[in-house]
Length: 131
Image (cartoon, rainbow, N blue to C red; front, side):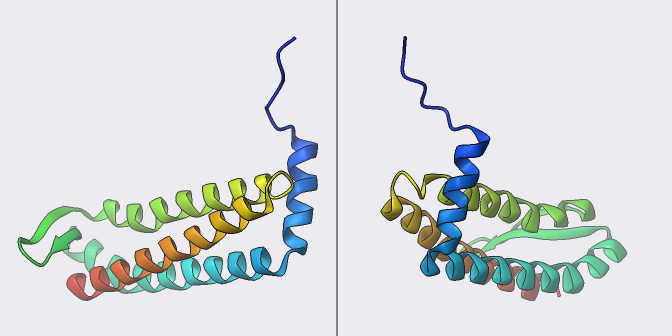
């Protein structure tokens, strides 16, 4: 009979409980969630009214080409939505792997926090372009 590598719900919950007891995992995850919520609220409060009024929003720009992706206003929700998906994936993987490999779990959390910081910086610039 082949070895079953799938994780069951009970195993994931046990691993998540152990991960939450690790101060690095706990506080890095809390800090990342706070950063996500803060920047997402700031983005939606600053960009959404103007996007709704004008009917369009800028989703991407770069130094060389300038604004290169303008879409209709509902697309403004994709910026925080994509980050939310990545954050949830990061947290679920980190909490699930903690029991099997503590170092991998901590690395996933740290990379997730770094990625969220980069996303937050890019979002601040999108706020400035859209304002």
